[in-house]
Amino acid sequence: MEKERFITSTLNKKDVEFDNTLRPKLFKNFPGQDSVKERIELFVKASKMRKDPLGHILLSGPPGLGKTTLAYIIANERGVNIKSSSGPVLEKPGDLAGLLTSLQKGDILFVDEIHRLNTSVEEYLYSAMEDFFIDIVIDQGPGGRSVRLNIQQFTLIGATTRSGLLSAPLRSRFALNCRLDYYKPEELVEIIHRSAKILNIEIDDAGALAVAARSRGTPRVANNLLRWARDYAQVRADNRISGEVAVAALKMLNIDDDGLDEMDNRILEALIYKFSARPVGVKNLSVAVGEEEGTIEEVYEPFLIQEGYVMRTPQGRIPTDKALRKFGLTASDIAKSGRRGTDEELKLF
Image 1: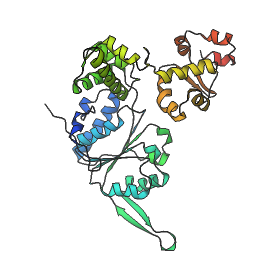
Image 2: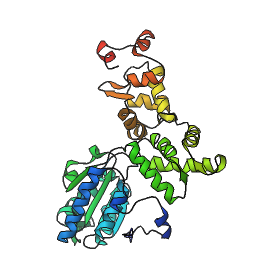
Image 3: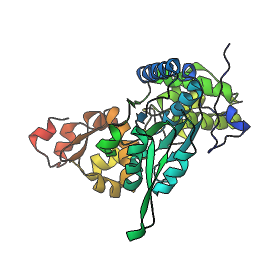
Image 4: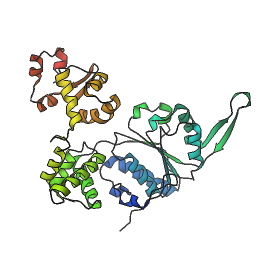
């Protein structure tokens, strides 16, 4: 049976405890995202057969779906080193130059949150990604000069939670663009069982399904909830996570049967009660619930929209009929309470 291997990074060295983490290291151990995984796996195999460096890859999607994990799997399966950084860290062209000049042929540079790259740094990436050189300007004024640095042919893997913020010139330079979507409950169950085995946690199918159903379609959330359920079971349930134990543990975190946490419900309550189900802009919603606009847009809103609780309209966010039913209300109840809206808006319910 083939053992899992991992190519260590000379920039971001991993200690021996990394082998005990929950990140899979091979494609076959990465559940879900089947279409994306199939494309990337084919891309990697073709590169290995030609013995050429990989083309540049852009991974996009909500946080916690496995973009970083996939980047390390790609490096491991391709048999090359990987160096990692993030968009906000690369403030100056010199920061990027230091990374690029240290790469060997075929190595991978992984940049998380690539949409947050400084514009000047991004422009240096253009020539690096296409022609594998960068021009560094030394000094300013009449005595200024440009020095061209040739770099080895490398692969850039960019990860972003907001692909729409990437400039068109940068986006067009990626050979493969893959978007990761939220996971299905059965896929999360597989992830939870794998993580439980690694962490030596006893959990049955009912317990795994209860955790998966409340994990917002996100493996990172699933693993965090699994750890919490483990702690709960250790103290109150003889170290075994059953369906009832999992539900009880997650209720302590104010996560309801629909998988909505306290902030999710506060957002829905604000839309329904504070704003009488009228369209609301994200700024007003942010003030009403006491949460940052970016967090609402990137963390809470995508899940609420996907689950059918919130709808975006040109005028703002409105709760759907499903959200009203969750609080025991109907569209007619809202209308009777004095909701101000047009007939067209009411049809959305």
